[in-house]
Amino acid sequence: MEIEIFTLADFAQDNNSKLTVVGTFDSIYAQQFPAQHPACSIACRLRFASKEAGDHSFRLRLIDADGKEIIQPVEGNINIGIPPNGQFASVNFVINFNQLRFEKTGRYSFELYIDGDWKSGLPLFLHHAKK
Image (tube, rainbow, N blue to C red; front, side, top):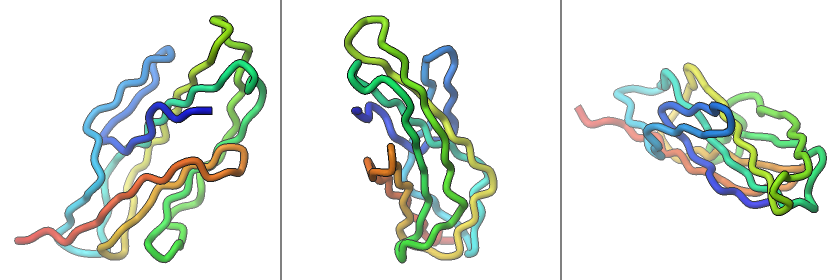
């Protein structure tokens, strides 16, 4: 399994296996804390080799610098069929978030697990905006 895309964006959508991603970012500036971010999306595109066909699980966590979960992990299953091209199959998924709450400045991380194994981390920095 290869990760082709794993990003945080203002907006993302999967439309008939075409992934649209708008406005990727890794920092949020807020006037005060706790802060809420109105909306964002995690966009992910995974590529599986033909020998990896079958069921796979995923888990997405959002944690703070201390490893504390900020939200309930998002979990699901992916069924990868035998690739029509005989080589690989790609799958997109988008997870949308509304009103994410951050208690303090610092580093946060989205962590992606596939079949229980950590595959990638995506940092998100929360900054206090200068007035």
